[in-house]
Length: 468
Image (cartoon, rainbow, N blue to C red; front, side, top):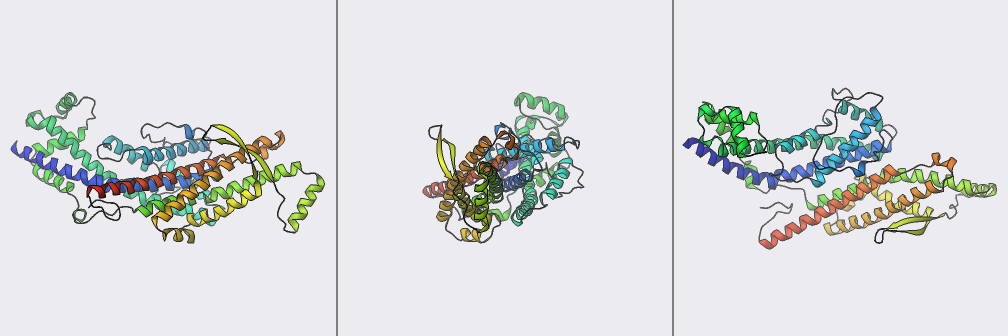
């Protein structure tokens, strides 16, 4: 019994130290890996929508999530393929967004049940072995979607697909490794709880799993019970192999030596900002698609309104490379401060020119080209100012695109409406990019504020933001 008490003390101290290490090191890495995972999948999901390989979920923005629920992964018929993939991948995108932006990343919150849910979510698609020959229906279907998405796309989109697949594969391994570390901690923490509340005064003849379950239910009503862990405890405390098993457990809980000698390297503040810039750049292909669709709509309405001779003059203008005549639309916007509609005039061709200039910058960021390199060479203050300005610009573009989409639909004659090309999926993608870039900007500010508070308290932090 004295040996058991000594082990309880040693185990308690080891778990306490392990929890601190997990909080300061592994959980920060886990959140960053999951953020990259979610961002990469969101990029692929947007491409699937843009290519028309899946349909937009009309209820996507209305989904209310209180806890992670892994989407259906079962087989489906060819007749239901489009509907099932559209619904499941929309749900998956929402679940990942909930996990990254609303889940608590703490040792206390991430219990065995939540770790199990996270494992299942990350394994929903086998990105490491993504193949059309996969035995798993969802993995096989996503591999087929991805192959179709690569057909006829430009170099930027192909780069986004390739980079997303690489990041998803790499992130999967890192995330699963961290979740295994957390699960190992939680398993030993549960067994420690059993020892302290149930088995510390029990003799070997009482250590049947059913007896332990009953006593634990009385001591901790409503808490989950894990029979396999109770059986492990019995072997460790009451069998001949117990001392060796206990030593192995204590060894597994020791903090890696390299982590005690030096500060753990974290994602730098600048990396957070640059990721926000890349998120903004990811809308490049979407803006290009919006431009193509809106130009077709503009031509459709313009031709309908012109007389025969006006059409001839317009054609002559094009032949001699003259600028197109002024096209002004009377658009309706919603004033966010007053919640009332306001009307503004828009010079369509000027707007399209400004949008193309902005889009060329975004394209350079999406491909991590010269524009990205120039931004990476700037100071953090310059980068955050750049991000704030471009978020505002993109918000303005989104507002105008939304109004143009409504304008073309309302102005088209009944027989023309089937020819009007809507941009609702693209608008949703742009909105998500704005939200994500804003989240990264807020995270940067929060980290800087935390560092400043630590400095005031006399706590030293390294340049990457980890406490020494």
